[in-house]
Length: 122
Image (tube, rainbow, N blue to C red; front, side, top):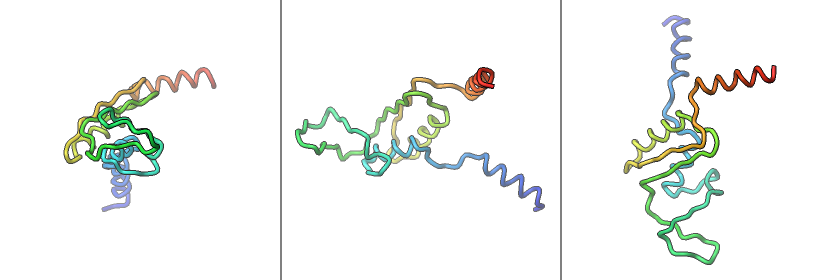
């Protein structure tokens, strides 16, 4: 293979999205499977099915979650949504994930907003 072809192939490899979990997907996976990590230690757990506890330890269900609601306050994006959907399909057992956000914009809308900002602040 020529040097030019190798260069082009490396560029194509960088464009192809690898099957890596984005941060929101990693956090959802860890919370759904009840795995502790530095990323999830500040998240709160509320399960109306569990008995109320008066001490500092919060009782948690040991069963992994099958239905998950993810809501992003602020800008969400289609890549996060797709990454969560890919995770839900490969998880065993499969999970149902509902993704919502207070603001979801397309790539074109994002670029339009950037160009408007550039006009205001040259």
